[in-house]
Image (cartoon, rainbow, N blue to C red; front, side, top):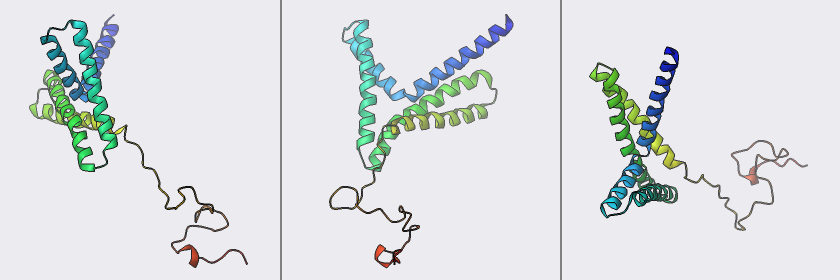
Length: 176
């Protein structure tokens, strides 16, 4: 019976740590939804309306951020959008870890050390989740017709040999 209690305690603590991590990563969305929910509640809507508005506000905040992060090409603006989502997540991760660390660790220096490491991890995770929706680079070929070339590129055909830094006109011909 003692072993079952210990295992369930560890699983419970692990679940709450995972939940704290998830809420910290989505801190901006959580705050946006919570603010919209409180505004809806104070306007006189019922509990069902508050829940619906809260979920919609959080989802819209995430969708707008991901679309803006994926479509804007300027690295400075993209970085600002990423920081808009990562900084609240890092602050939430820091405060949550600091609270847990104060329960079981006696030294204040270790509290702060664990909190800073976890804040960086949570902020990096929030940044990475925003960057998931950035389209990959596409290779554009400089041909006037817009299609693929009719002759193989240098270095791709076995008859031409390896890629050479020389222009194609200066390469020795392989046919006699």
